[in-house]
Amino acid sequence: MLLVAVLISLLAGCQPVAVESLQFEAARVRLPLPGTDKTVGYFEVTNNTALPVVLVSAHSDQARAVEFHTMVRDGDMLRMRRLLEVPIAAGETVSFAPGGNHLMIFGVAMLADNVEIVFTAANGAQYRHTFRTFSLDEQ
Image (cartoon, rainbow, N blue to C red):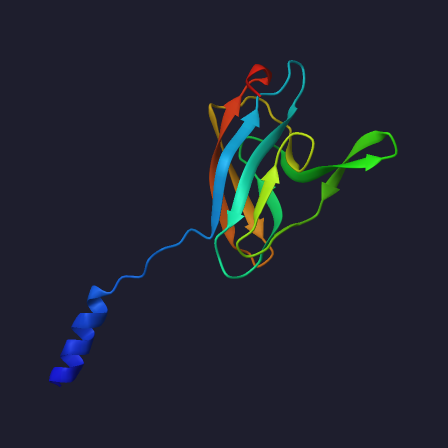
């Protein structure tokens, strides 16, 4: 009985260290250009787990739709293509930056100084992050 009490007290003192599975950096959403209701979002995301994470969707209460997009070269032209998923290997960082991967944000009426975007992974896990807004002059 004494051994059980000692084990319980030892276990009670041990607290797991929480590791954020996805780490977002430099998260920002451009204010829409005058007369438009769409804009872009940029960020870097690092997978801090030992397993891959596959992002399959994103949404925000401040927009009708949020999609993953990338730019691809087609001859002399750069064209935008929708990405249906964004795989992030364990330990990998994926960048969403001008001229490459980015978020397309549609149906924006007005943006606050900060925009919360919720990402959903293929396994159903959700990741919330707050993006700051910026103007075209600040890029």
